[in-house]
Length: 113
Picture 1: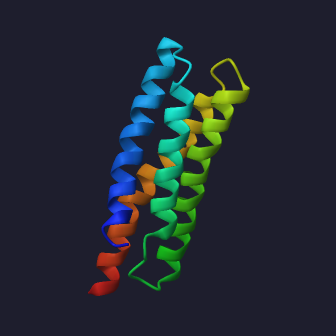
Picture 2 (picture 1 turned 45 degrees about the vertical axis):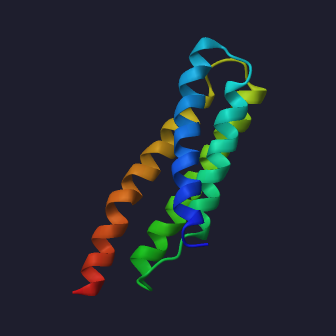
């Protein structure tokens, strides 16, 4: 399971990138690629263990999981809205993911000291 989580994350992240980029071409399979990739990313982040019991890290992990679920919700928006409303959801998810990807290692390093 320890080797499966990073593989899910890497494959999912590549699929999310290609799915979002191919949406510009209006290819009919691009929302499927994006949604499968977002689901893999969300599964990897939900199942990744946390090394810290700090309340700050727990809050950041909840934000990270919320961002991952927003990625999946963006896939649903790609299917059900035929304009570009899904970009707003993707932007919010990306900001949350980026923020937590920097803050969680900083807080875990603080806890180790």
